[in-house]
Length: 163
Ligand SMILES: [Zn+2]
Ligand SMILES: [Zn+2]
Image (tube, rainbow, N blue to C red; front, side, top):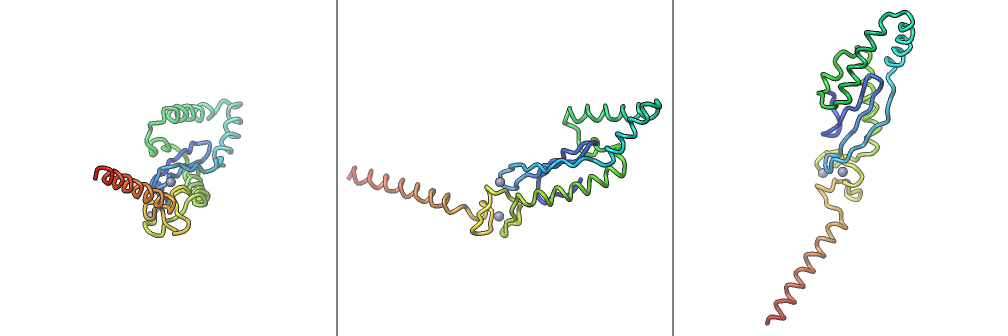
């Protein structure tokens, strides 16, 4: 399992290419990195086309591909199982693509100086450099304070009316 800068991420990679979704540590909103086609897969495709003509290897590759498509469709498989049988080259690409995807996704996240979580735009208080967990946005805070002040006024007014 690769280690992500956010606490949660999803690996959307297949044998054809690599893609990852990173989730905000606060609201769990996801950011999906751009799809990177696997070089190994591209080369393999050429190979498979060649071998299909020769009647070799094509069955093998086709069979494995078929299974993979099936398990991706089912979606429930654990990652290690899903990526089992991929070539070492694929795994190397996978790792590189993950680093690349993280660099890309980090542009869309902010690191909180308080709790060091990575959060999305909506969960980041730019003024404070803190996530909304650590520093509620001023507007939100003001709105809350105003609401409770109003409640207090209404209560007081009610009491006065009784007296
Ligand atoms: Zn968020
Ligand atoms: Zn924080």
